[in-house]
Length: 197
Image (cartoon, rainbow, N blue to C red; front, side, top):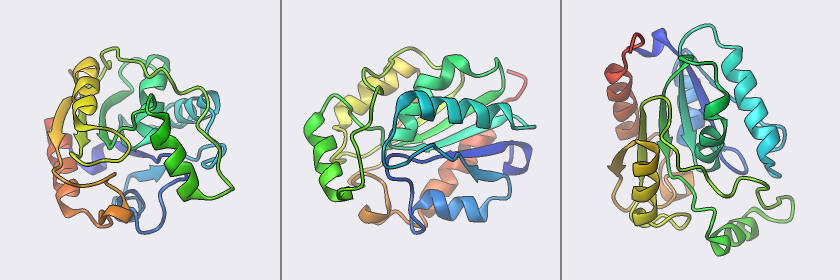
């Protein structure tokens, strides 16, 4: 499959993806990509985020491939049972957060300033196998999730795990703005999908 064959839904994480983030750059560059608008990026509540994602999937005319970062990844696994069967044909997931590590979330909240609130209702994170193919990219030095935990998460979801090396949280702050290798990995993932499977 190619980009033109699918609707690419960008699912950002907590505090959204800024203009230099790879998701924002890809959204501008890829013709069928659009961002899922969450009710409040700074004060994430699972019910609202899951509802917004399910509505976005329902509104798509083509097969859907989800492209998520951080809390967007967690939103997808909560929403997966609610998608119409066969509508989502794949999920490309980067930097899943370890929501059991509260110290990590508190550190991110301090970084975000006073206008943010702790994500509500996202934990515990489902570990059930996803009903569509998934690729999970994780970093060995992500402050939001140890690589070993990402490997356990990927195994539970039935996702292919890709080691990104020392890539931090795979965001603009860790140097992942354009992320050409990520674009190549996305293209390879799209090629691997079979809409009739």
